Length: 180
Ligand code: SF4
Ligand code: SF4
Image (cartoon, rainbow, N blue to C red; front, side, top):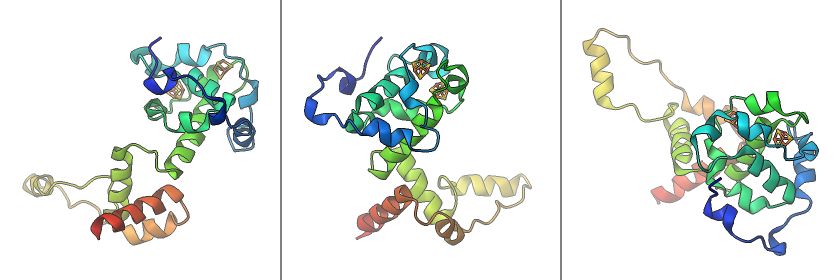
């Protein structure tokens, strides 16, 4: 198995947060994390791991259980999960692996560790209601092909519905700072 640089670095006792696994086990979807006995079934059945030298759900679960909070939340591979839930279906210990990964992503996003591409998407949704800026050329092409205009979005309503989501609040703040 090839590991990422972060996974290869020696672990320092100071970076271990022994309470982290208990925090995760109190969150919806993380209840069974303590049951993981590192059998590796999640990794062996994961369709992403099959094509990646670095993505290993078992490793993410192990890091979380060890209390390597900052390390796992900073891990680039966290964002490779396709949320197919195969791991959850196959885990013999009932660990909801995909849900734990979702929790880890949420925590990472709250801390601003989300990849730039997701931050850009979030900023676009907050601004225009669309996940990405629709190129003018595409809009014109729709017209020439007789297609109806794209549905009108309501970013104001979206912002209201998502009020309190820290990742989006941070994204909005970052956007305002960049505009200054
Ligand atoms: S399949 Fe379940 S028990 Fe096995 S390593 Fe993955 S999470 Fe742990
Ligand atoms: S949910 Fe993610 S970790 Fe689990 S099998 Fe699918 S891609 Fe792999």
